[in-house]
Amino acid sequence: MHIFAIANQKGGVGKTTTAVNLAAALAAQGQRTLLVDLDPQGNATMGSGIDKRGLKRSVYQLLLQLATLTQTRATSPSGKFDVLPANRDLAGAEVELVALEQREVRLKNALAPHKDDYDFVLIDCPPSLSMLTLNGLCAAHGVIIPMQCEYYALEGLSDLVNTIKKVHANLNRELKIIGLLRVMFDPRSTLSNQVSAQLEQHFGEKVFKTIVPRNVRLAEAPSYGVPGVLFDKGAKGAQAYLAFAIEMIERVKNWKE
Ligand code: ADP
Ligand code: MG
Image (cartoon, rainbow, N blue to C red; front, top):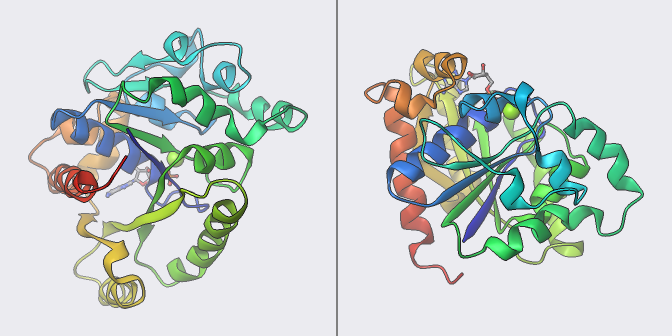
């Protein structure tokens, strides 16, 4: 089981789109996949076709140990992957966890008994470096960082890299950056191409080969509750996420668990 957190403390950079579409694309490749929604906005939940308003149990109950993973998980109706769903309740966990034991490793502990159930676990983190994100980073083996190739992208990246280093040093020796994923890419923009080249120079192998273009079909899909890769399989964005799933499967092939 490979556990990856999809993180970037900036909002609107494509974390949730990446989490949902990579989950669906991995499932389409026959990988047993679990998507964990760690954002109280519940966008990954809705984007997977699960109504966040009608949840009996959510990641909130899971983190507070009021429910088990088996009691919490749902299956995406279109996507053939499992989801640990979230809604606004999860915002409360942030405060309630502070006073509790082992507060950073609640998600890690909840996943541990299921290590043989899934090939991939993807964790959609909220846009902050909060207790929720910390739970994501403590549970994960690696971080996937989606980013837009714009002027300030590199600046924000150093904060995230420092946080990952701290978590690695103090809480999770396994944690590493798996890679940077260029998303919402506009190949006609000179700036995008410059930043993209800078990223490759700076981070080398850590930059994924796949580039996800800006594609309106990916943005439309969530309102139908269907992952973009299934909503319009032929669209450029869907094709990119399918290619990304194959790149990820190749990357992990030679790793030890
Ligand atoms: P985050 O989870 O980091 O806040 P989202 O995945 O929710 O970011 O993306 C922010 C917005 O950008 C959403 O409206 C989403 O539909 C849109 N979006 C994400 N990726 C793409 C893309 N490749 N092309 C077009 N729109 C995109
Ligand atoms: Mg999001």
